[in-house]
Amino acid sequence: MTQDSELRIAVIGAGPAGVYSSDIFLRQLAKLGDELGLGTHARIDLFEKLPVPFGLVRYGVAPDHPSIKFIASALEKTLDNPNIHLYCDVEFGKDVTLDDLLERYDAVLFATGAIKDKPLRIPGADLDGVYGAAKFVEWYDGYPTGVREWPLDAEQVAVIGGGNVAMDVARELMRNADDLKARTDIPDNVYEGIKKNKAKELHLFIRRGVAQAKFSVQELREMEKLPGVQLIIDEDDFELDDDTIEEAGKDKLTRQMVEELFAIRDMAEDMEDDGDVDFEGNPADRKYYVHFNSAPTEILGEDGKMSAIRVERTETSADGHMTRTGEFTDYPVQAVYHAIGYKPESVPGIAYDEKGAHLANANGDGRITVDENNTEIRDRLYATGWAKRGPVGLIGSTKSDALMIVTNMLEDLAKNKENARLAPDRDPESIDRLLESRGIKPIDFAGWKRVDAYERAEGAKEGREHKKVIDPDQFRALAHGE
View 1 (cartoon, rainbow, N blue to C red):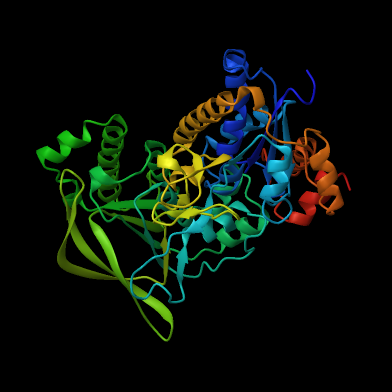
View 2 (view 1 turned 45 degrees about the horizontal axis):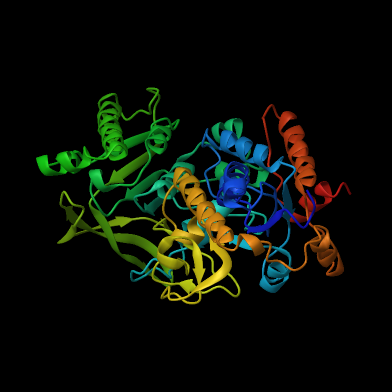
């Protein structure tokens, strides 16, 4: 094999979507490449703007998820493939341009994810004390460019949202700092912040009914085991009609979620009957209210600072259609966190579909288009994960996306198999020379392993498996062996 014969692919984003796509591309090429006339060899260069890989797994999921370390371990094994080359601390659109990549790669795949909140469009959303979930997640996950302190002085807080991010945020706001530190890799500033958290009462508001929530069973089970926290449920929310029960039963995951929610309802009743205790029967000093069919309509306050949230009671039909009742309740709270969805980032030089909140691609097949109307495909450019479909779906969806996109990429390359190696510059070291000429020092996989080893050593000093580094300059120094 020569450097001219291998396919060369650039992937933008080293989170789950980018890493899974890289792995699947190599596997599918090895399996189908000869049949397609493409050969079976490829080099994939994976570019990540952060100093470390793993994106959502490291910086978008609550640190107390037990599955995180298993997912991260699987991603790391993929990155250890000699045909995948990691370039962290390299930002697309700033350090490298689209023209730079098309000169050196036969195809470019965008797996850029999402870190911005969808805006909360109700009166009062601009008052002090109203926060988007994304920034809070960045804080407790130690995002390199995130804030290092977070105001946790509200005794009564509200969380808006019916999905897993809302559940994560609510759980961290109810967490005991010592319990969280013992089981996770949180850095010192997050531990100290949560230790000072004054929240004693939390209200989670979900617009639709029990059968329409989007929680995973794992999230619900984690909510059930919060030391010192009493769960409080409105039994009226669980009076489901036959049509709703039948509809929920058609989907396995929905059925499992509803069954778990009914188990939580029973648990909440026991907590109250036993004298306002937590899941272990110990006295609870924090109360966690879960409100279904509750749509926040306004944030109330004065002098620029919020003081309460106004919520309208809703009704939800079996098919998920929500209607408003005109019944309002005001809840005194001093902070509101909204987790109503993320908005994937735009990418320099690539059209964006504002309605779908993703990069413009043809009928959701991942082929990048000239504009959001999907009228004309741009050759050699693709999107996967949230960049392709918007901020919906879990890790399983990301894997399915990756397989579909890779299939399309190989199909397109095979159509032009006599000239599939489209990049004129086929020197594998060309990208390194380009970055060096611009003063860019990428962090490769070996550099990441140095950071990881340091984090494990620091964690071991405290009897923990891991302890996150959060300072970007420290990342760089560790990665480069300085």
